[in-house]
Length: 461
Image (cartoon, rainbow, N blue to C red; front, side, top):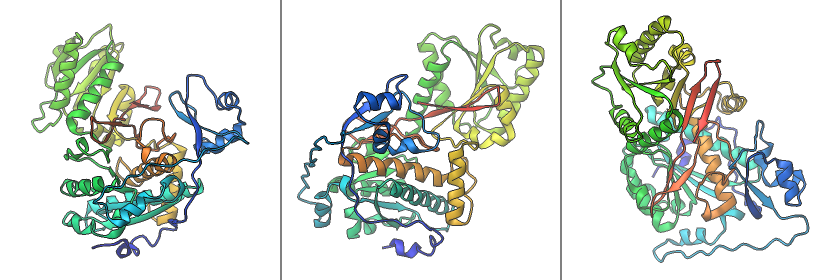
């Protein structure tokens, strides 16, 4: 059994202290869904509160850059002098729970520390381990930020490497006391952890992509990433919503290794179902035949059937050549998440061709919040984050802040639904929905839009 003490030296540079002291959670009178044009002042006035009382109940309003948006959920506190009711949870531990788990269930997590377990490969032996160490550090940074907002945590971590028998880890009595377990990374560990969590009523956050289908049967699981088919359908639906009045042009890039046929196939079916006329051309087509596929009166949206950078370069060259003779053509590009890896090589063309990149994450390099978390990471760990398009420390921060705060506010009733926490993610949007009688699946995705005016916007769904 590999406990966190084996990794204390690994994390010794961390100046964060994970607290275990209990904290009193605030009880709220109501939850208010923000409507269009509502303001903090107006919501406070309508509920007989001062602005400061409303902000005290919603400390995220004090975060730099906070904006009240339609659909946000604002917590309405009791007015000064109002009687605050006592809240009791109806806990009914199953007979096969351990005594430690039963003891855990007896305490309302909204009025004590949130007990979190990390079950990920925490080592430096390969890329998986190094990425998960960074993710774990982001979790610790989130706990430090939550501490400033009165939320206490008890963090335990286990090194669940690829060859680890997770059943041995789950025999540790501390595992059964967790409110939330984050992990695992590998599919082969999910079944055992899922069964363990189900019998002990522990929430499990599966933070990265998986082929496991356990989330469809276990109501205690929260899965961040959708599988490939579901994600393709989601991207296709959002594509249709935004570009239904445009003329799609699908370019065959002659890439026999491409894995994007699932997306382009779903897209074609949707366009045909909605009666939208589209064109298909080829990177090897003559200039005349290539140009024939573009509309002179509508905005053209170009979709490649590959995500590779080499074919993208050829496509941009062909489009630039066509634009020399047809400067009035309206063209936008619709890409793939992999394109975020090619920003340095293709940034000017991304801007020029009004490019939309669908993704499940995006870190704006110019955002003040991005810069602050980079500086905090450097200060705490004396090194920079690894240079991936998805910064794993920021992912860990977003996941932990969202879930721990949500469980602090709502206890076992936390579902991860949109607006429950009121947290604006730095990189990774989260919006969970229940799948039938199973667990919760993150439905949030975004388009990264590189505008012609050299600005970048993120459109979150």
